[in-house]
Image (cartoon, rainbow, N blue to C red; front, side, top):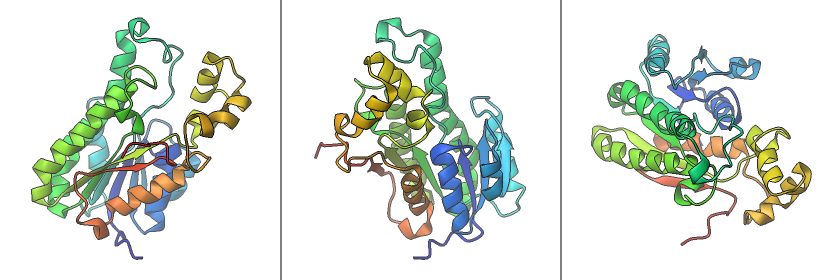
Length: 262
C-alpha cells in the first residue's frame, strides 16, 4: 500500500529512542522528511531523520524551535507525532499518592501533556494549511488510573481529552488528530535491566529476569509478549498517512491484548 508520505514533512518528538525512533524510521522508509526532536540525539536517529533538533520540549520555547526547523525545509508541515512521554522515571515514582511530591506531578504532566499542548499550538496553523495530521502517543494507563506511577496515568488521560478537543475544533478545518495508546512496549523502559522494569521488580521482591519472564501473563497480554516499538510505529505511520482520511478523534489501542473491556 502506498501511504502517500513521499516528501511529506513530519515532526516526531521524543525521536531519540524507543517508539519515537521506531516511528522516525518507519516514516523515513515511506519517503517522509522527518524532523526528529529529542533531548538525546543518537547516531541511530541521525541516520534516518532529515533534521535532528536537540531540544528539551519541557522548555516553553522549544516547540517553536522545532516548528521553525521543519519550516526551514521549505514545504510546510504535513504531520506531527507527539511521542515525548515517560522518559526516565525517578526513584520516587513507585511511591503512593500521599508520598509523591509536587515535583513528580509537575514533571509527568509537563512531559506527557504540556509538551503536546505546546507542539499543537505551534504547528496547527501549518497543519491547517496542509490539511495534515497529528498523532498523540498516550497509553492504556489513561484508562487505568489506579495503576502505574502516580501522575502518569492522569497526564495521559488528559492527553486523550486534549486529542478529542483538538479533533472537534480542527477536524472541520481538515486536520486529522488521533491518539495511539500502547500497552507495555519493548523499549528500554522495560528491557533495560537498570530501568523502570527493574524498579517494579524490586518493589515486588522479584529479580528483574523473573519479573520480565512472568510479566506477559501477569499483565494479561493475550499474545504472551510485549508489543514492539516497530509495531506501534507502523500504526502511527498509518494514522499520519492520508489514506486514513476518515479517522478523526479516535483512540487506537495497541497493547498485545492487555485491555479486556468491551
